Amino acid sequence: MVVVDKEFSENENEDQLRGVQNYNLLFSAIEEPKQTYNKIDLYPDILTKASCYMRSLARNHAFYNANKRTSLLSTVIFLEQNGYEVTATNEKLYKLVETVVTQKLTINSIRKRLKKFTKEIPRKRIPTLIEFFEDLLNKMKKYK
Figure: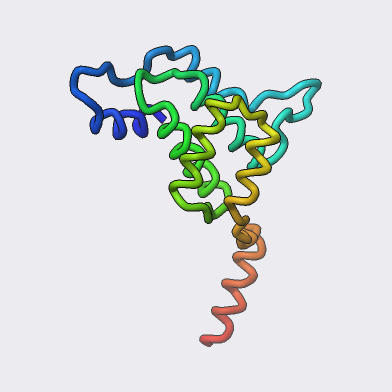
């Protein structure tokens, strides 16, 4: 996230401060989606965790500049790394993060919007080690 902020900050006015303004707020935003209560995940699915990241990064203002852009890009990267394709336009996404900040949207409200803006990509099941070797042996038998 610091790298994302740095990329955006380099396009800002040189007189403006850059980088992390408050590490505690940044760590809080990063750790919030991992919270549990009584060993139960408070943010149980990817879209809810992504919503939590978006809200926390955009509203905590851990960076001097580009908090909304950093929040948006971090959320998109998180979703893509966890099996989702973002289908919304850049304008819709930026309007969402702007609304998150100005209207103080809840996690559930953000999640509903992200669900409309994404589609889950089916992941291939990774074979177990035994299945891998059985398949390898079967393929080798064909070439004897």
